[in-house]
Image (cartoon, rainbow, N blue to C red; front, side, top):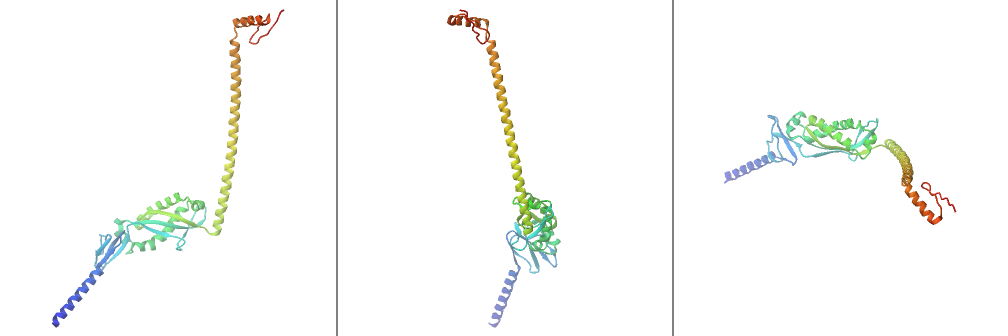
Length: 281
């Protein structure tokens, strides 16, 4: 009886140890991630772990990398806004976002390159430090007003393409989208911006007034030309009518007009287009 009890205890202990061992060997890879497996004896395995549950030796390590879209935010609220240069030698603080993911086919290579760091460590300890200077390299080609204005599409497109090319080789990261989401000028810079905005508005107003004067002058010129053309056409029409009238007076018409006038007024002589009446009584 005693031996049976001891056997049962040993069996239970073995089961507990076995279950505990299995629990320790279970590795869950979250949705949108892949895991790189490493062991002291075998190094980095060529095959990565996809999302889901996996049995992994407790003597192996698994490092996770996002292959779904992740967003990196560097904002003023989080104390991570940073300054960038401009083409007019200004420096302005910005909040920034970057959507990214690691290239699945390059995870093993990326893991080895960064000596066992996982995806989050690479982004926080490597990407962030390089990101700020790379963004500034692009913004240095644009003016302070370009960056400050709400229309930053060209800048954001340039930043996205620049980071995409650089980070693919450097970090094994695909940059999906990158953009300046806000600007934070200090008081001195804000005053300078306000002055430029005012000057720009005054310039635009002056140009609009000049354009208005040009339009009015052109309108007056066209009106005068049209009026002159109308007078010329009227004069030409009148001259043409007089010519036709003169051409239409024949000898027979004159004789007939004289005959009609004699019947009514006595002796009448008709000369030319206008009647010259001579009466002999």
